[in-house]
Every structure is written in C-alpha cells, then in structure tokens.
Image (cartoon, rainbow over all chains, first blue to last red; front, side, top):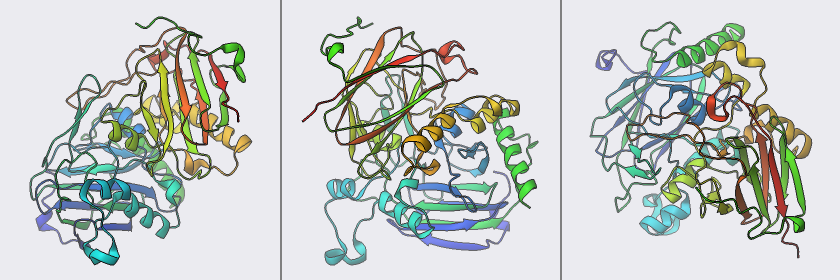
Length: 244
Length: 217
C-alpha cells in the first residue's frame, strides 16, 4: 500500500528480539516501519513530542476523534494537545490494538514463571512496563509519564457487554505497519507479549524496525478519513510554522 | 433499572463530607484506606471525569489499559478494581446504580475540542483545564504530565465488534450513583464535565453530589 518500500533504502535498521526494546528521536517527515518476523507479533508503541515531552500520545483523544477503537490505515495518532503525531501510511494488518496496555514484571512472573538475570542471564523474560519505564527515564522522563500505548499487530475486539476478545496470532509473518511522523518525536517500542495473549511459554517473535525518508502529510491529503484528522494535522502544521 | 437506594447501606447524616459540585467545577481530595466516596448524578446523564493517583507514590497513576485488561472488559461497574500503571489497586467499585462507566473516552480539552468540533472551540471551558487548576491549587507535586487518560463516571461510550466507537446517549438517570472504596491511600482528581458540544448530556451539563465517609481510626 502506498509506496513500495523495497525501492527505498532505509536511513536506519534495527532488529529487536523478543523482550527487546527501542527508543529513538525521529524527525517530522520520517517514516518508521515495523515488521513482524514471525506470526503473532506484538509491539507496544508510545510517542512523546521530542522538544516538549509533556505532549504525548493520547489514546482516548485519538479514538474518539476518529470514532474508532482500533488503529488502521490512514488513522492519525493524536497527542493530548490536539495535534497529529503520526499517520499510518502503510499497513498490511488492518487492526492494531489501542486498548490493552502492557504487562508488569509481576504479570510476567505469574504467567510464564519467575526469571531473573542471576539465574537466566539474558534469557530472563522482560516486561513491557519495565521496558517502557527504562526508556522514559533514559529520555529524561519518569514512570509517571507512562500512558496507554498502541499494541501494533494485535487485534482485540469487544462484544456488546464490553468483554474483550484477543485474536490469537492475528498478524502473519511479514506483517508491516508504516508510521509517518508528523512531528519530531521520542518513539518507544517494546517487543513484549500482549497482556491478553494466552500463548505459553513467553511468545518470541523478532521485529525489524526501519526508518525511511518521507514527507509530512498535507492536511488536504484526500486519504485522511475524517475532518477531525485534517484539523489535527492543521494544528501540527501551524505549530511547526511557528517553530521553524 | 435499579431502584434508587440512596441511603440503603450508608447513613448520609453520618457522612464526613457532602457537597454539590456544579458542572465546570473540579474537586480534589485524598482518601485513606477504607474511606468511601459516593458520586451522585443528581439530574442524570452527566459525565464526571475522574483520575486517581497512589497518594504515597503520586507518579503511579490510574491506568485505563491496565484496569480493563485485568478484568477483560472495557466498562466499569460493581466489583471493578481500578489499577495503577504498575498494577497497584487504587479503588474498588462497591456499589453502582448506573451499571456502566466509560474507560475509553478520556477528558475533553481545549485542544481536543478544536479537533473534534472545530478550531473556533479552543476558548470553551473543558475538563483538562479544570484538572490543571485543581492540581495547581491542591497538589503542586503533580503536573500536566501526570494527567493520564481518566475514568468517565456515568458516561456511555459503546464499542462495536468491528472496532467502531461512538458517544451514545447516557444510561444514567437522576439520583444514580457510584460508590468507590479506597484500597490504599488515593488522591482523587475530579472534573464535572462542562462539555457543550456532544449529546452525551443533552447539551446541558448538570451538578453532581459528592459524599465521603471516612473510616477513621
């Protein structure tokens, strides 16, 4: 969908094994592509504005502005300041879960058995909470900055009573999502199991991250699905007109 | 539809705090372990945007995602335990005559109003302004960075199996209430929503009543 990525050379590529994590500043107009190297991957994603991280991904604002409880092609990830942070411009999956958050160390110990570095060395099992907090602190933030992420590649649907249903191994091997950054961000990714994934033992699916040169979205882009997305994009364009 | 059971279990005369919170106003307090907070939807279909913090570790705030994943359901009602990001229990819903409370809608803000309703709505009063003024006045250790996605008591935001989400007409009514029991020392931060742009309250924000029973020592 959209441009064929194979014809472009990434600016940067990184493999993340199961349990791994990543945080990086990515500039406005660059595209982050996350690829699942096996079936049933899950990648928790958080975004913070690079020069003012008090502005960050706000899942409720993102969902209610676009009348959706899932993230898919040409949805816009919005900040708590009413601005577009990133746009999904490439998606082979069709459903990414913004509802379910991550597991803590206690959750991981209880579900997969206790592990620690002393006994298991780097085979110890990591949690999404700890991964995110380490990257927050590394970027000058703290645990209080943690907010609900988007779980890329995972599908959770809700029935009429509100019960959440996890679809096992939803995303096939080779699934890709491309996120065009609409502002300079700190992006945090944790390759850790979805909290509702029933698989045992600890699911192990490597991810590949690549960053490509791209351009910010024009607010008039007809592929934007809603007036709300267009207005969020305009808010970002105006902010950058003042900044740069 | 549950019948009104205003003081079925608790004696309002014995309450330590009773106050009416008009729409557009905020309220902040600290509950000790075992204290009970009742929020009464006096006229019906009002939304009460509420955040919780572990009072001894204020960086550890309410997590919508943690709470709904732990119970496997996106709505809150009697029995629901509200959790922090790190998994600590904050409050438990011990009585609920409404039956459903929203975890996904979050709070309105000047900025999100520009996205949802139009750029000209930036000057309208909103819940995140109320939150910011409350923390400035009462809990200066907290900052805008601590304002995570909140609970909306009495609000109805149904999600469809295909992933669609809408703000629906409320299912609350006059006198319905929700009661929360503190499971640790908890800071409660509330905004009685002044939203005039969506039909959740028939474009008519109304007051709520707040009642607190202290367990004492």
